[in-house]
Length: 349
Image 1: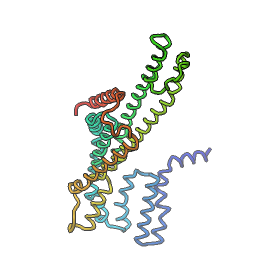
Image 2: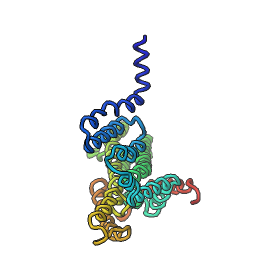
Image 3: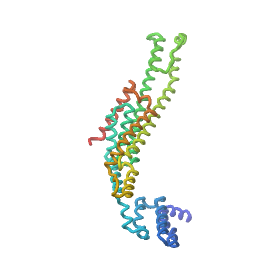
Image 4: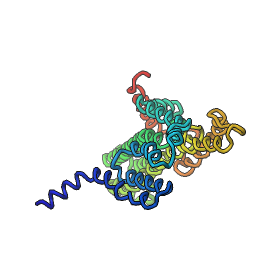
């Protein structure tokens, strides 16, 4: 019983024990090897254990060098402190605050819904609008954040397309059954009804012998029903391909948008810091405007090429269509109504 109680107490106090015992266990290192390298290694090991185990919050662990390095005599406070708030760090703070504000007021949804309503309801233009919205947001905020807030919008659009494509298929099959039922109750020759049946479904082969025409039309209906799984599989495969294309479109456009502005992604900011530390004020200085003039045209070109490639891989049948097929008009009309409703539900800006 006492053993169980001890293990329970140890489990409950594990974080506190690790927080206290880690510096004590590693203490022989700076005592035996008394130099600045050993003291620096001692601090690095402590920080590594704290970071991995998260015995204290990560932001608190990140602030410990500001205290430990001056205490150990590795670096002075006036050397350590400026690294915590350079102009690069200010850019990070600004971009994170901007991203939080955008997410808080649902600005990303407003932008996405407005653009999707404006570009048209063809699948290829919906993907183009989604990519443009994601890239624009990623220019001002973290790539991961822009991807995470745009993925639900993309999934909702693909879901609606899938639902209404399935409903359209069900209505088509219902029409097939009605035609076959009418053919069993008269109202014209069986051969004419079969011609209408095959023209409606485009899935049953037209009978070639008159003997087959004169047989029971229930057999013809079963023939059409046997084709249903193949049609369903084809529709499901098309929907899965479209879903892959939309998900990749959001991911790729987020990365492309991130490279188009100075605050879009971390490597851009590091480039600015590297150029300033390497060349100082003697050479070319990178600021937000000249970086935008350089990177934005490249990003737009990459976005267009990426859109064309995704269309070729996942939506090839609509790539060169000027007008959508008639059966897609109802789907697109409903999708536009859904987007407009969601935009109105956000309220006035």
